[in-house]
Length: 263
Ligand code: T3D
Image (cartoon, rainbow, N blue to C red):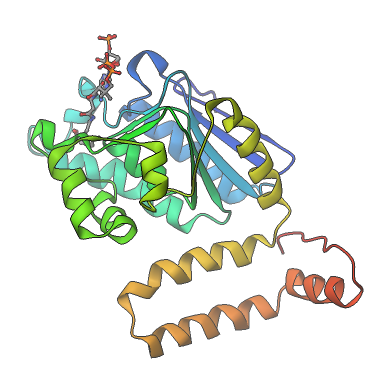
């Protein structure tokens, strides 16, 4: 597929997906959603890919829904934002959560609306210190979507989640790190190198175990401790049959670095 709204390439097991509408702060259009779906299908099917990095071109990560995109007005009711969410944003987040590789959001700048939620749907979020997160929704009479009402309270607690969502104040990256919303805020000049290093590290790790960690942790809030212990047992059983477990144990016993394959 030829991409017009994103950049997508893979190298050394690292897939890089860059939202590429810098003039409109990489806001989502129907066309961009279609390209995102196509790229994520590649990540899901290309077994040489071991990690996905999502970022934005220019001064923004993503400013959420393109509020001028006519493609977004299709649906049985006009306007039917619920239809847009069901058609585009819900599948995007569910696909990311089920993706077979770990995901990194490299938040190079503004992350607003559904753009902030997209970042939070990634496993690890690294932001430039100049970046900020903005729950822009209340400014236009909407609620945090794209998983925002799920991710925010889990990460920062209800008081801060409600404050961020209702007041729509900018949350600078460093404060986002202090509040536990993201993994790390780094100097702008270090962002690219930090993400490269992290991606290279993740690409050498036991991929299935990383993804099972995501799935188990996200399942936990819906379970009792007893149920969650069973979830862990299920993942451990499955991982114990895998090559990466055998390699990890062998490397430990032979006092050498493991060579994981993701299998
Ligand atoms: O159908 C649905 O609505 C369903 C989905 C909803 C999910 C959502 O994401 S709702 C939330 C949508 N996003 C927003 O409300 C954010 C809107 N943008 C802003 O509030 C501001 O742009 C920012 C605070 C993010 C950044 O402000 P600033 O001053 O740094 O930049 P700017 O000048 O406002 O924007 C630069 C350009 O990008 C500008 O275009 P222009 O005038 O130079 O041609 C601006 O219009 C454009 N832009 C920024 N955000 C969007 C956008 N164009 C379309 N949609 C946007 N979301």
